[in-house]
Image (cartoon, helix red, strand yellow):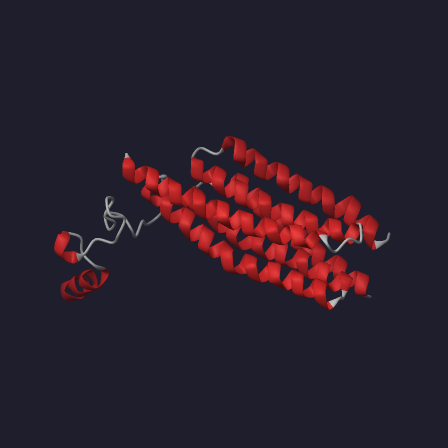
Length: 135
Length: 91
């Protein structure tokens, strides 16, 4: 019974890792690839480590597996955000068929901060007000 | 079919295939950021392979190495993105 549960969990994790790898090759755009590696691979490796914890059934090994899962869950979004931010600044292009780029013309490329509304760029709240007035 | 045979003959080849696919993106990747992401995912798959290997060989101490690998992957990504941004500022 225990073996069946482990086989199920590990197979699901492997499936997710395979999907992440296929997505990394097939996705057309850097930002879509980042989303694939962050979500699918984290879930897949988490399931594999859960299978390890279920197999050994010792408190020290379960703690180790949970520590690795916790660390992965903590660091994967931070790493993805950092590399996505840096790539946006150095001008990695979006996919041609992307519908909207919300950050276009809103970043100051020298200081790497958001533009204030006194420097020419409009902040989102102001834009919303203008839209409401037009209506 | 025991659990060891299942892990050794089905799960491990699929994980290796994923590693090869990621390596294709690592070689092709048009920009430097693509390569950084591919490296990150390669190390994450490595953690999964170590977890399966520790079951097959009944050696739970391998999980310590997996923990260190997770640490190094995060540090590598952060360092790469930091220097990508700095390089842009200097140009």
